[in-house]
Structure formats: structure tokens, C-alpha cells
Image (cartoon, rainbow, N blue to C red):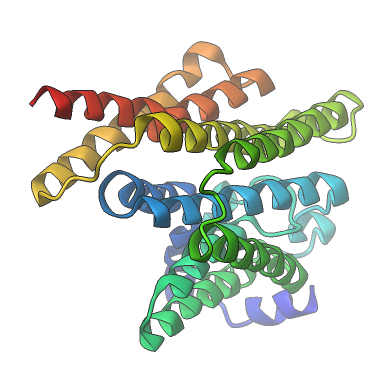
Length: 295
């Protein structure tokens, strides 16, 4: 907390705006959009590497959040004030940092893929900039961001080693898909048990359920696409842009459009995120694969 107070003493309106902008790099929509670009339009192997790093680290971080249940800094110390504009994005428990997990999964993976030292340095600058922004804004302590970085970079390194370099996934799609699905179900059940026992509220359990639903759909989609769909990437830039726009539009409609219909229960949260990711990894690829074959 002392470090956060030290940073708070140097806040300015311009600094608040700058670091609020930097922290948006780790927002869910930005990360998922890049994964979609690689998956639908550029490099499926890269997309799988990104996806597994992002979803596995997300599941681990969410599991740690509801296990340790450490409140946000302004709850731990009511005299401490975070930057007000950062509060809407600061959901769930403080430890470990979800934003740090997202940005590390994304740019950590891209750094390992890059052959240029300058790009690798820029990727890690982006990671550390987001980590610093979370502390500057008063949303996380150094422990929150450092543990999240360590957990996520481990997932990135393992994913890079076994799913990208050695392509361990070839012939083992079923095992990988099943293992990840089991992890998702374990976290889901764990969150429900804690919620029903009164240890965590619906809001805190919801983030875990969302991660479980998204991870479950991704694990199933990985197996289905690798074994049955095997869609081809477009070579035309216009087709890539059109594919991205249509795919993301439907994904957003699924995620937000059905929310007023099915509600905000834990089951509803699981369904929304499962359907959204299922659209991204299974349903949409099937749709544009069949459309392409007609031509």
C-alpha cells in the first residue's frame, strides 16, 4: 500500500488519462480481437498458441482470486483513493491482476514469436506499462501484478514449447481438449460451491464462471476445428477485413444481446461466454467454410 500511496502523490489529470488509456490494452475485447484476427485471417497456429496461453492463465488467475479473496486496495484501506475512471474495469478480487494476465498472455506470446529484438522489447514494454498502470490507477498492489505476470509467463512458455515449437498437439487434440475442459469444469464447480457456501458473492463468482464457459468452448473448438473443420485462411485483404467485421459483430451481439434475455445468473454467464467463444472457434468457421465451398 505504501508504494501505491507514493504513486498517488504524483498523479496528474494528464497522467490519469495516459495510464487509463494504457490499461485499455489489456481489456478483454482488445485481446480477443487480436486472437480472432490470427485465427480467422492470419495464422491459426499462432491463434491457438495465443488462445491457450490466454485461457489457461485466465483460469489459473481466476482460481487464485477466489481462493485467496484479497480485496481491492481501497477496500483494504478506506483512506486510499483510486483513480475514479478505473473503477468500472476493476471487478473481482485484487490478487492476482486480471489485466496483467491478459496483457502478458498476449504480448508475451507475440514476443516469443517475433524474430526481431526491437519488437520483443516493445512487447515487454507494453506488458510492464500495463502492470505499472494498474498500480498507478490504484487498482492493484505490486504483489498482485507480479504474481499474475509470473503465472501467465509460465503458461506462455509452456504453450510456446509444447503447442508451437514441438507441435505436441498433433495427434493429441483429444487429450488436450479433454484436459482443458476438465480444468474449466473444476473451476466452475469450485466457484459455485464457494458462492453457495456464502464465501464469495455472485459478482465474484461470475468472473470465474465466465472464464470457465469461454475456456470450455475454446477447448472443444480446438478439437473440432483441428479434426473436422480445417478451414482455410483468406488471401485477399478485403475478405479478411469483411470476415473480421462480420465475425466480431455477431460475437458482440451474442455476448451482450442475450444478456437481457437470459439474465445475469451464474448459469447465464456460463452460457453467454460459451456461446460467444463457440461462435468464434466453431460456428463461424463452419459458416464461412461452407460459403467458400459454394464458390
